[in-house]
Image (tube, rainbow, N blue to C red):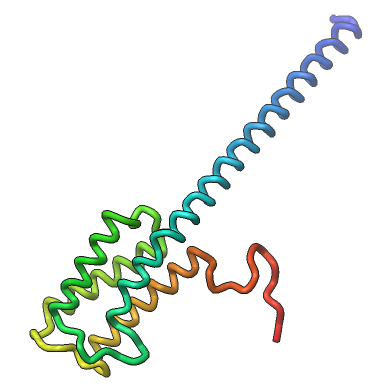
Length: 161
């Protein structure tokens, strides 16, 4: 049976090792957190650069005033401009929700282009509204990614009116 001094030394050494492991884990956790925070900030800055280009592209289908000159030719160009933006400018910076909204818009454009005769969309028609709504949803997701429509940043509660 070991004497008390050996047991005490062993327990002290185990405690020191456990403390060192805890300290290393804490430092490592902080390094990982700091890197993640910097990556998030970098992505946010990049989104601020590339999202306005995508936003502007969606102006083809406004709510106010509705456009009476949206043709299949313009929609095809719009579809191609979206694709070019996605692959050449900023698709890699879209959040999952924004990417889903982008995909829904492209799918809706594809469906309309397959079914629509070669004449302008009626500004009050269902096809115009479906596409306009997809554009609006995409823009909403972009603003969510940027937190650009919030009065307060962070976790501050919004004041009641």
